[in-house]
Length: 563
Image (cartoon, rainbow, N blue to C red; front, side):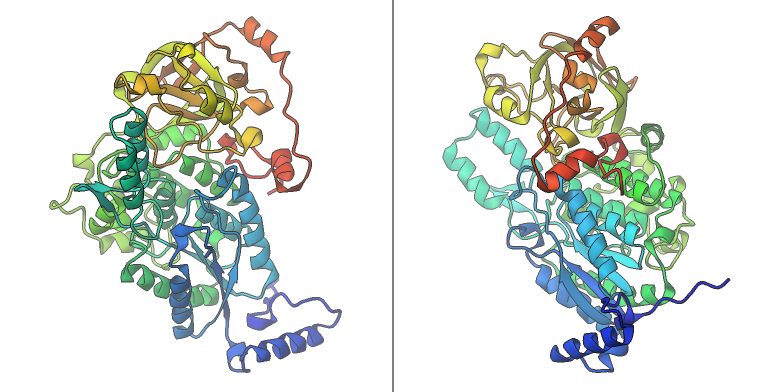
């Protein structure tokens, strides 16, 4: 039996008035008021997800991007319709954007389904916008192509090149330690973010842009062009042109995001030394595609993938250096022996064809390395398990201190991010560099999973020159952060996980060689403590209540259980 052909263009997703002919007549009448004539309305329609917001400086030039996408759609004979969705911004959203990623994914999916469009161009950039849009596109499963806003250009302070937000954290740590004063930190504040765009280091936004290109949901070379450049706008035009072809070819995300494409994306993440947050997002994306990415798969990919990209926070460079070195296409070329090259993305060409036209990393630069000149041979991000995290945890090994790769120390426990903020600098705690700082109730259920896991070094230790300690939490940390920080401990404290049972003075052992994080107490003591567990109260109403009732743990992508 042949599949029934779906209506196209303006006839898709008709409003229900009980008479389809009347619905189409009324739709055309109202569109006529906006200047659309029958020739316009005979075209395929491309929806454009517009996440511009005054609250989102990462998307500052998005109106120009929307206009450029529209130009490409029109050039290819389509009819563009831009529509708004939630715009998640890291800096101006409380309590954390992670609490709203799934809401954005739901809203985007429903608007794609509800409105007439034969394909959709997804415009995002800031950390949670891109994974939310990809999750939505996979569930809606109409032809889709992703475009990112691109990174900021670097700034400068007293001759020192600066980039948000790894340098933000490094210089703030110096300010806390008393190395620089108030006047200097105010100068730095004015120079850290010199243009619109996402953080210009290999944080979550940059990592997810590169992962999306490796998945095949973005045109080749689309991940790294800076926000403020003409090249970024050219990517928009090209995506607009290609979106019309995707509609004609019915090239849906479900055909692109295969197990092999997921493998390629995870491999690229490891070679980038990318954000630990991308572990959660790519796991959720895989789940939306009907696949499973578990700790074993992550460790298998990590163990065979060298770190090839020298960008902060795991290196010294910035995204514009990565772009000038050839970006994701050159990185894929360097990784070619480890990839599934039969995959086909939105370009319509097999990866093998794209790589045949791509040169290997050039010897005039050191930002993208060859496998023969790798920064490290494997393990940029390590997934852990053990008695403190039976369902898994992660650490960005490439940004941690080798001296702490194996460490045993007594725990100092903080009950929440607020508790840590209030007490971390209290000398009465008598914290030493050998202690393990444990933060709990920062997981998906407990707090929406804020970027609170990278606890600051206590001020009195920072003033003594201490720059790193072992820190463990069920929260996340910014992809721009660094240090020996164990994150995403699952199950989290708020659902009765072992991290909620740690007491001050308990010995905690981190062993990266064995990929373990253990709470060194006997089972009977642990069982006794479990009896005292009380689940947290749910919010009275609204989205956060729905989220807390249905969200999965970080090891499963922190998506909603019914999606």
